[in-house]
Each structure stands twice: as C-alpha cells, then as structure tokens.
Image (cartoon, rainbow, N blue to C red; front, side):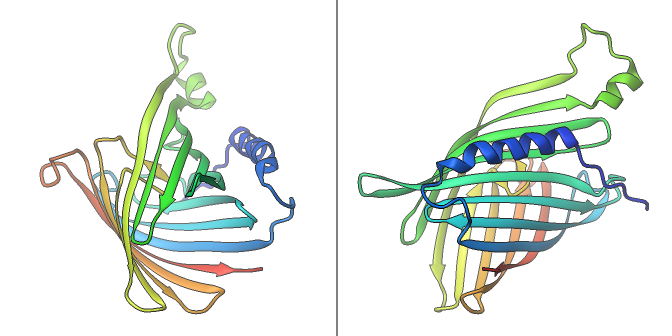
Length: 253
C-alpha cells in the first residue's frame, strides 16, 4: 500500500501563531530550561480500521519554570486510509495556585486530516489538579469538521451548501488513580473521553491503564493499554476497540 504524507500549511501557520501568542504567559525566560522527547509506537484494531493498525508518535516538550509547551505529530498505517499523516497537536500549560490548591491550566490545538476530503480541528481549555493518589482534569473544547478546498472543487458545492459542521462546546474529562509499585515503577488507571490525538463525545468514555518505569533521572519507559467503546452502557454491543502502546520519554537537556 502506498502512503501519502499530507501537511496542511494553513493549520501549521495557525499552530505557530498560537504558540507565539501563548508563550509570553510563561513567567520566566523565553528559553526552555528543560527539553524532553516523548515517542511511542501503538498497535490495535477497531471497527473502522479494517484490521490491525499501527501508529507512531513523536512529541517535543519544553519547560521553563511553571510554563510548558509541547508539539507532536502522529503517523498512522492501516487498510482504512492511504495517507500516513493523521494528526498534529500543540499544547501550552502553566501551573498556578488557587489559595493552597495547585492546578495546571492547559490550552490545546488538535488538527486531524480525517481523509483527503475532510478535516477535523479542535481547540480546548482544561484545568488539572493532582493529589497524592488521584488526578482530576476537566475542560471544554470546540470542534469543526470541514471539507477541504479540493473536495469543494471536486463536488462543485453550491454557495448555499454548508461545507463545515461546528460543535460549539464539548466536555473533556479525565479521572485518574495512580500508585507506586516501587521507587521506579508506577501504575495509573484512568477513565476519560480523550487521548493524545483524539477527543470522544462526553458519553463515550474509555479506560486507560499505564505502567511507567523510571530508568534514571533522564530516561523513562512506559506502556499503556486502552479500551475504547462506542457508547455509554453499550460496551459489549457497540464495541469499538483495544490498543497497546509502548513508549519512551527522554529528557534531552
């Protein structure tokens, strides 16, 4: 199968602009004091992949003081698509304290070329709090599905036809429990409606189990098992899929 690498220059320009606008909110130097690389491979299957699929992700993360920013891309390979590039993300975050309560506010941009004819664009804002064994993350996102200009020309849509669909507000959530098995080995399980490169509807929760091994202060290995289902209380009827992920986080500087 031949794969095409497709990058939308307009979306990349929007992402760069968001990065420039959000970066000044960092309280310290504009030069990141810590750079990390997060990369993983993933395999799984679901009702739309036409068999097994494989994903590869690379994400660059920078942090200075209380401010952090990350940018990443996802390559996907399956029988259901002829293009490899499947998602681009940009996130910026800052740590705050409301009284004595530490929280993190996170803004995200996610762009996905669903096919050669359709695109999905997401903007979101979330707030996160982590306690000793529990983590809470909740927020809102807005999503736009739109036809590409090539599809509009190909199908010769009339000017009166809407070529995009806007979902004004969707809720995002993640409830996590984590505990150390040893000084180097940590376990986390979560119920959520989103993952790194996709956002489900509020009524479509998924379960994530994560095992992390800290090799040393610079190198961390992790594995994740994810279970996605197509609708609340219909886990066996509308089964969606399982995936297994393995990755590494390397602190470069």
